[in-house]
Image 1 (cartoon, helix red, strand yellow):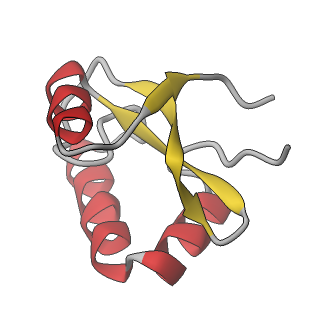
Image 2 (image 1 turned 180 degrees about the vertical axis):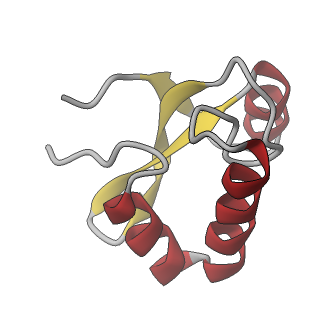
Length: 87
Protein backbone atom coordinates (compact mmCIF):
# COMPACT_ATOMS: atom_id res chain seq x y z
CA UNK A 1 0.00 0.00 0.00
CA UNK A 2 1.21 3.47 -0.83
CA UNK A 3 0.54 6.10 1.79
CA UNK A 4 0.93 9.83 1.67
CA UNK A 5 2.28 11.68 4.66
CA UNK A 6 -0.08 14.55 5.43
CA UNK A 7 1.23 17.95 4.38
CA UNK A 8 3.92 16.53 2.09
CA UNK A 9 4.23 17.85 -1.47
CA UNK A 10 2.70 14.64 -2.84
CA UNK A 11 -0.17 14.85 -0.34
CA UNK A 12 -1.08 18.35 -1.51
CA UNK A 13 -1.06 17.24 -5.16
CA UNK A 14 -3.35 14.29 -4.37
CA UNK A 15 -5.73 16.34 -2.21
CA UNK A 16 -5.90 19.12 -4.79
CA UNK A 17 -7.15 16.61 -7.37
CA UNK A 18 -10.12 15.57 -5.23
CA UNK A 19 -10.73 18.73 -3.18
CA UNK A 20 -8.78 21.82 -4.30
CA UNK A 21 -10.47 24.08 -1.74
CA UNK A 22 -9.46 21.83 1.16
CA UNK A 23 -5.88 21.69 -0.16
CA UNK A 24 -5.68 25.49 -0.43
CA UNK A 25 -7.16 25.86 3.07
CA UNK A 26 -4.60 23.44 4.57
CA UNK A 27 -1.74 25.28 2.85
CA UNK A 28 -2.93 28.57 4.34
CA UNK A 29 -3.21 27.05 7.82
CA UNK A 30 0.33 25.69 7.62
CA UNK A 31 1.65 29.00 6.32
CA UNK A 32 -0.07 30.89 9.15
CA UNK A 33 1.19 28.44 11.79
CA UNK A 34 4.73 28.38 10.40
CA UNK A 35 4.86 24.59 10.71
CA UNK A 36 3.35 21.54 9.01
CA UNK A 37 2.78 19.91 12.40
CA UNK A 38 -0.77 21.26 12.71
CA UNK A 39 -4.26 19.94 12.04
CA UNK A 40 -5.13 19.82 8.32
CA UNK A 41 -8.58 21.26 9.03
CA UNK A 42 -8.27 23.88 11.79
CA UNK A 43 -4.54 24.55 12.14
CA UNK A 44 -4.54 23.47 15.78
CA UNK A 45 -1.53 21.84 17.38
CA UNK A 46 -1.21 18.37 18.88
CA UNK A 47 -2.40 16.70 15.69
CA UNK A 48 -1.75 13.09 14.67
CA UNK A 49 -1.73 11.39 11.28
CA UNK A 50 -4.77 9.33 10.27
CA UNK A 51 -5.78 7.28 7.27
CA UNK A 52 -9.42 7.63 6.25
CA UNK A 53 -10.55 4.06 5.63
CA UNK A 54 -13.55 5.06 3.51
CA UNK A 55 -12.09 7.92 1.46
CA UNK A 56 -9.49 7.90 -1.31
CA UNK A 57 -7.16 10.23 -3.18
CA UNK A 58 -7.77 8.43 -6.47
CA UNK A 59 -6.36 4.95 -5.78
CA UNK A 60 -4.42 5.95 -2.65
CA UNK A 61 -6.05 5.97 0.79
CA UNK A 62 -6.79 9.50 2.00
CA UNK A 63 -4.75 10.75 4.94
CA UNK A 64 -5.00 13.80 7.19
CA UNK A 65 -3.24 15.29 10.20
CA UNK A 66 -6.01 15.92 12.70
CA UNK A 67 -6.48 17.27 16.21
CA UNK A 68 -8.90 15.43 18.51
CA UNK A 69 -11.75 17.91 17.91
CA UNK A 70 -11.55 17.69 14.11
CA UNK A 71 -11.16 13.91 14.27
CA UNK A 72 -14.36 13.69 16.35
CA UNK A 73 -16.24 16.04 14.03
CA UNK A 74 -15.26 14.20 10.86
CA UNK A 75 -15.98 10.82 12.46
CA UNK A 76 -19.45 12.02 13.44
CA UNK A 77 -20.01 12.87 9.76
CA UNK A 78 -19.35 9.25 8.76
CA UNK A 79 -15.64 9.15 7.99
CA UNK A 80 -13.72 6.25 9.50
CA UNK A 81 -10.14 6.70 10.70
CA UNK A 82 -7.15 4.63 11.71
CA UNK A 83 -3.98 6.11 13.19
CA UNK A 84 -0.85 5.39 11.14
CA UNK A 85 2.71 6.41 10.37
CA UNK A 86 4.09 6.47 6.82
CA UNK A 87 7.59 5.27 6.48
